[in-house]
Image (tube, rainbow, N blue to C red; front, side):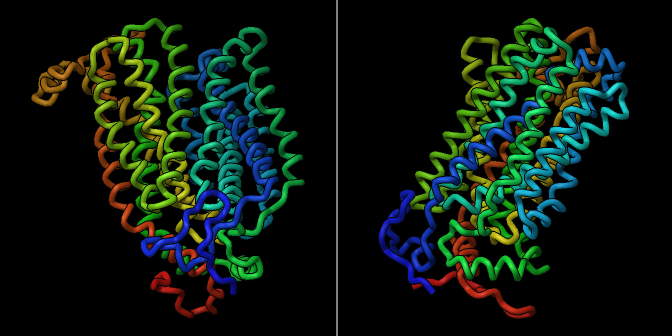
Length: 493
């Protein structure tokens, strides 16, 4: 068994001290040169997935007119990929832990690419519904597998930044789809726009079959023969139970869920808020929605991950503390966005709010990698994705819609709570000829979830040093036979 070294490792890990929980565990292994090329490949595939998702949002109006969709049907088709992804992700995660991952990667990319082509060819609601469900299945398959590969290739010292770069594909794809999708549809048709979005994915699917499949956990510094033994033995039922009650894992997942609730609601309601509350015209609101959120999300992703990795060199708790601080700062800015006056500085407040909401993605998934054994990271990522979607961004737009409708009625505004909302500036307004809606009050529904996010992320910080060290200690030890006890505590002085 290799002996731990007290020398600094490549990637910036400081020399261990007596407070370092990783002192007696193997140091992380630097990523091979080709890992960065693989990151670029996965980033490109993720951009295509994001383009398809946001292209549907950008082209809902012409698509709905041609196919004669009701408003409820269009809303359902926007939500359906998230639901399909959430329901499929945990099962897919199990396969990602047991089979050669490039094959699953190719399957996922091919499915969402073909589903995008099927969207272009749909002539009615039913085939369109099947196509959008397959988009969710394909993106979940690709996303979970991609995350586990990156977690295995890159050491913990840079992992949050690498994951943030991967997630950066979301804002890039959103900006491309929202800014160029409508123009492309006008110049050609919406069918052509989806064909252009889907066809390149089929090429990437074929190329992904040639990608290497890294040994699970190779970046952790454990000898490869020991890692292959863990791979061959696989995780046991009690290991999955332990993961689901692991404090760091559950706090990170619920931190993602609570902030995801706010992100989903803001994404759905921002155009209506800008036109109905801030008084912008429809084209102005479209431009603002296509530029400010993607740019702010990109800044938040990179800044949050960079700060967490930098601070995490001396204190592993930083991967919780940075997102906790971001969520806590986002709360007053969210209130200022929803209730503040229409002033030029509101654009800066909106930008900062969105940036802070996205600051937790890289650190929280780095936490998932730190406490989940490499042979069960697929299930961990799939479960995180499922919970964050089903309890977060899937239903927040609907809840906010209910709030906007209820507090748009005179009876509700006549209550004590309604009068308090009116005092704060949350009053009903007529938007687009629809019945009066209280959009500002609807946005306030996310304020408690941001407070909850800050609380759970702060609460998880004290558990991470011990639980991440325990995962590494179990990884370095030989896999126990069935019924044998695992390492109970991390090694110490």
